Amino acid sequence: MSLGSLRALARGDAAADRVVPPTGFTARLTLFASAAMCFLAVFALALSLAAGRLASSWGDELARSSTLRISAPSGEQAAQTAAALRLLEQTPGVARARALTEAEQQALLEPWFGPDLPLANLPVPQLIEIVEDATGYDAAGLRLRLQAEVPGAVLDDHTRWRRPLVAAASGLRLLGWVSILLIAGTVGAMVTLAANAALAANAQVIAVLRLVGATDAYIARAFVRRFTLRALTGAAAGVALGVVAVLLMPGAGSTAGFLTGLTFVGWHWIFPLLVPPLAAAVAFAATAAAARRVLGGLS
Amino acid sequence: MIELDQVGYSYGGGELLTDLTLQLAAGSFHFLTGPSGAGKTTLLKLCYGALIPTAGQVRLFGQDVRSMDRDAIALARRRVGVVHQDCQFLDHLPLAENVALPLSVSGGWSSGQMGNLNELLAWVGLTGRATALPPELSGGERQRAALARAVIMSPEVVLADEPTGNVDWEMSQRLLRLLVELNRMGKTILIATHDLALIRAAKAQVSARVLRISNRRLQMAGADL
Image 1 (tube, rainbow over the protein chains, first blue to last red):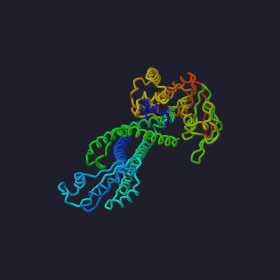
Image 2 (image 1 turned 60 degrees about the vertical axis):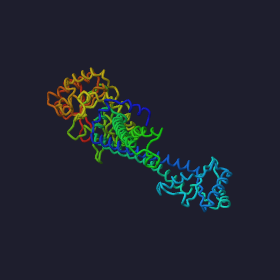
Image 3 (image 1 turned 90 degrees about the vertical axis):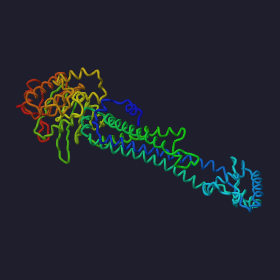
Image 4 (image 1 turned 90 degrees about the horizontal axis):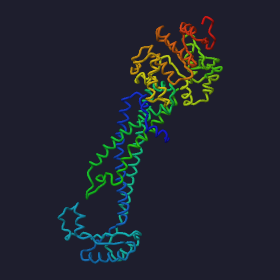
């Protein structure tokens, strides 16, 4: 895509635009395909970006926290909790550790047992939240010390369940970007088919243009500009609808889950704005290639 | 201008033209005649690079067409006005835009040239038909419009393929007068026609060389022409 051809595309040529007769079928096909694909691209982008946010949230925040569970007979639980907190204070790599209050533990169990759970009467283990510093702690060493000094303690550094979740979120992010590439490829394929149809339908027009001294670049430009503008128009409409649909998705609340976070945040709003020019660029390249091929094949 | 040197052209295994040698010198007037299917249109197409010879050499303004890419041939065609047998218009564009098409494709069209275009339409007798679409034109109007389109770039050579094929005698005389006028302006003219009466009428007005294609070869026409 040369600078000159881009300049000519942007500038336009009213006479060149008119030499190719309007073809309703290919025009509608290109507009619809571009709009539909770009509508889907907005969702793929939102999915990819939301998955990315989730992956970094799980990757960064959860990687720095872990939980210690004290399961001891009721008479020993307080003593073992205090011993565990003392031990954690002395452990290198632990920024802070604190025992969850009864209210916090009740809140954790509430989704399963309801709000009226008599926690004080139940043998519920005491949970200690551990937050690592930047260097992190030696989990294996801590487990050995806990085994010796706090027999009822079980350390859960979240690694076991965090890794597959991070992998799943990263996979989703990748899937989103692959979808966008596939969508771009589909836009290119649809525009190529439509451009091929238009070029074949206008073989006589091309013959006349050649008879009067038109270069291949001139003939190609007449088709390329038309398809590029159609793809751009369709893409703008598709993106506008896609953004509205994303805005209508349920917002992320305190129970923020993956689906409720399917939106654009902050500077990520720039991504959907890039979709129409990218669709136009794909259409430009696809039509230019189709025109080159067809014009090369015509005598 | 345009030179054919021992040119042959074969298509689909059959030899259509063989050993043609022809020089279209500046300001010359040629008729090309022969029976239908003799290869007149093929020879004309060889003259403007629409066909590449299978033997010999065609030189457009000194350049061998085999060494020219499509764009170079397109640029050479701007120096050659062609009146095609079936006129070949863009049916969705009005007559004025069709006539101005060579200027548009060469980037030379501007609204300031509207006066020149109107003069040209007046010269071929199509004043008042500028906005008509090609399917609305009569055979004679189409031929005159094709001639106007062929000369709008002020080409050095005008090639006309059966320009009077679909018009009555009066109209063919009118077209001939326009072509003779162009020749007097210094243009090189080559007209392919099977209309011997037209050739005789032309020879009364201009010094024309008459060539005949016979048995795939080019010959000087007999004294009867």
